[in-house]
Amino acid sequence: MKKVLTAVVVFFVLGMGSLFAGGGDEAGRSSDGRVAGPITVLTNRTDLVDTLFADYARRFNQIYPDVQVNFEAMTDYSGIVKIRMNTKDYGDVLLIPDGVTPPQLGDFFEPLGPTAEMAKKYLMPTEQAYQGTTYGIPVSVNANGIVYNKRIFREAGITELPNTPEGFLEALEAIKANTDAIPYYTNYASGWALTQWEAHRSSVAGDPDFVNSLAHTDAPFAPGEPHYIVYKLMYDIVARGLAEADPTTTDWESSKARLGNGEIATMVLGSWAIPQIQALADDPSDVGYMPFPYNNNGIVSAASGGDYKLAVNIHSKNKPAALAWLYWFVEESGFAKETGGIPPVVGGEVPESLQAFADLGVNFVSNNPAPAGEEGWVDEIDREGEIGLWEPNFKARIIEAAFGARNETFDQIMADLNEDWKAARAVVTP
Image 1 (cartoon, helix red, strand yellow):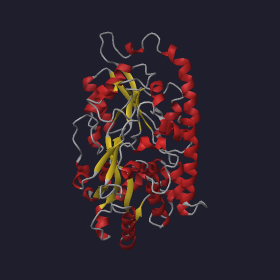
Image 2 (tube, rainbow, N blue to C red):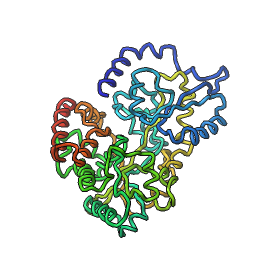
Image 3 (tube, rainbow, N blue to C red):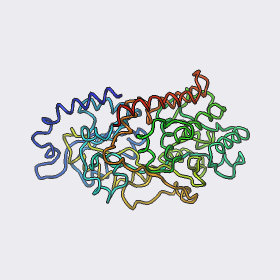
Image 4 (cartoon, helix red, strand yellow):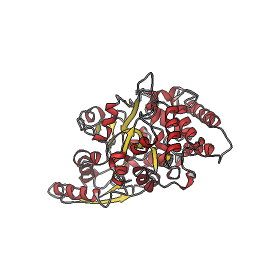
């Protein structure tokens, strides 16, 4: 992917000057100034595109009757969109895919406004911003944790939610011993589900500046560091036989119903998954959500942040209509509430599904933006070293090693990652 995005940057450097000569903003308006014309919206919600999203389009058209909204939904969203970003054809409105670094945002996406001004109305405007300009607004704000089946926990005799890795492993052991449920389901075959673990580096650190600190260390995977703690738990779950028997045959879509009805006890997922699982559960009240099992001197933290950020293709031939959809979607659609997240507008209501976190006194951790002059450093180190913090690669390697499909230890994997990180940091940072 590194080569693809590098090629795109070169393309834009050579071509941007002529692409927008003549003022593209007039496109998408009818002769009387109304917002009009077709737009294509790219989405990862294959499960909602024909239902909820169709209703959104109908409601949007009550305000903008001259805009034709078309959807393209894809399961491997980031993978496909990143390839399409080598052309101009990547929709009019889209979710910013993983792997786009802050300095690249202006090459691909329409600027939405000064970040300081955006912060007065929207949550997390810094997450896809560069040099004081915001390029994307989250469709929802999520907390990160573990979805679990309350009934299975009760049947296993678990009366308190664990707040240490060893306590979580003991709970999974109790589930294995006392129920027929799969204690933990990796969803290994999906790839993307493994990346859900990465958010918990901040849950373990409990520090909003932790991610920025990664640019100043040569060994983020050393014992005792948040990454080591997070992925050691992943490794131990599989190595102790507390996951599904064959990770290569996992299936995301069916796993939601299986967790809901108690065939599966736990999965690491963002809070966005809660309503999807509840909708398929025999009893929706069985579906619970717990923070990552770790505490700093008794304080349990949960990483929180924006979901995918909605943006407008800088090549869109219908930017007025595209921007109208973007702002209507984040402000009026109700998508965040429908999907169990916090609305991205300042003052939005916290969903009931996260009330348990508040009751437990969980400390929500939202990453601070990088200091001036260090924007994009962590992403660049990640790309240069081909680590893949938000890619499934090394997570799959950990599971394969724990499963016995690789002849290497967890510490050997961590040592390799540290070596690659150190070498990349020497290239990227002064």
